[in-house]
Length: 68
Image (cartoon, rainbow, N blue to C red; front, side):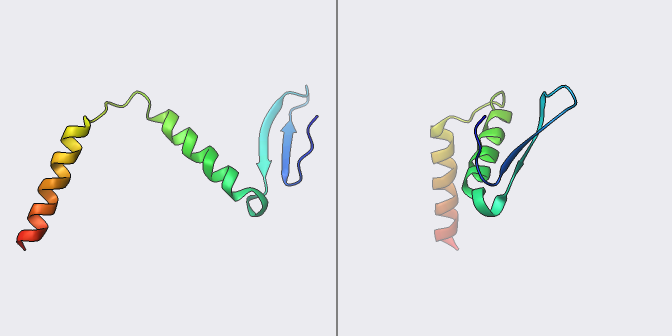
């Protein structure tokens, strides 16, 4: 089994992995990346917005700010 300082796999009575304990001080970047991936996966079924609509909304916002 792989041994990495600051990472521990907790197992149930049968030896099945149940929890992962990560020392954030040692592995903050990895934890941050994992959270980003999980968040992205949770949004896979959300409807997308076409890039043209996003660009148009940004341009409209910029024009409104210039007019103030």
